[in-house]
Length: 561
View 1 (cartoon, rainbow, N blue to C red):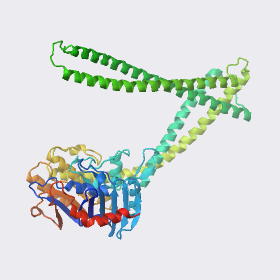
View 2: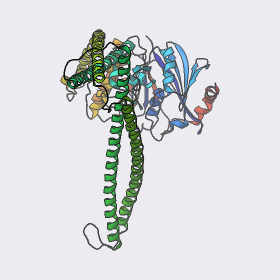
View 3: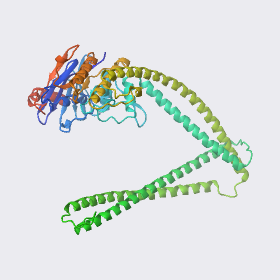
């Protein structure tokens, strides 16, 4: 079983010459402070720092400046030790002898390097080209971290900067759970490409059929086919040129319409603002005369009212300035587009002149032959397109069969999900969660009060259990849950949740939890717990003594290149 274990975490503050060092072990680790006055000792800083050092973006408190800190973590991947060094966007990766293996300033590059050691990396299609790519490391860790301020039931909210991919929840979950893989995304991509091709060909055929009907109506009778190859080629070329000019004219016309509509909207808003400014000026005049603009009564002190009106006036001036800039820019864009439209009209006139489209001396017979040739070309293209559509639809049918196999994998996952979730919901008596509405891992549910924390923990651990069952070869990351008992609840429910967590994760390679006033004697351990007691003063997690002891490590890793 592949696993990544956190051995030691270091947090350095070079400016303050302070640091902290926390050692962890395999199995379950408990970071605890005393029950009385045990807050603000740095538990959450430690928890957030773990996956931050591994390349994720987290929500540190505003009073903790990550940009002035250096983070180092010693990890063990499949019994091999490594060091990861992070300072802002700088990442360094070392072996157990502190020999530098690689350096990068991009988290996505870090993920590409780490996969060589972990054997796992979430891959998703990007938004621009729909091309499959290795995602930043944070997407590997989504199931394994809970921030104390982001217990949100069935949503991933503990990490920052997750909006760079489409359908993130579906894609991430099914990738972690072993349903989606690289082959699946390639099939989906190919299906979308074929759908797009078929759609284009069908639209093209609809246009060609309209053209054919129009030509036959103009000819008022039957057509004859032509054999002159050169005439055919020339007519086909001119037809394409003409269609191109028409298309460009239409695009330019639409651009002009949109620009003019935008200008009208901005000018209307500008007029409304001017009206509001006029009202404000009138009100200021009244206030200068100690007259209330609202009720007309005499007031002695107008400083407060005048201040509000003056602030509003300044705001209106700022908005007017911005609008005037946009209006001038819009007018310039309209002028530019109008010039382009005139150029295209001239180009069309020149083209028509060249082709003698409007020349009454065009030989009717030649025109008739030209219509016939175009008609023959349309019929030929319709036939060819029909064959292509048929071929593409056959290929699409086969791809859909392959994709359908993944639907069965989804069903297996979701059947287990519903059964396990239903049992846990019943265990904790969370009747507010309607199991009849939950059909898959994609369905969201909500809970309130103390049940919100419980529901969130259950959901995350359930996903980890599903991942172990359906994607057993994937590396296991440390489970890092912060402040499991940070909500108001009765002792019985709180202890039941803690026991549940200990039971469900006793066989995991590593889990790290934080508590205030953890009493191990109240729980069945089913194994050894590594209790880490934080005894530092409030806001003093980092101290000078630790920095003095381990600054040599900081210097060694910092200077490596």
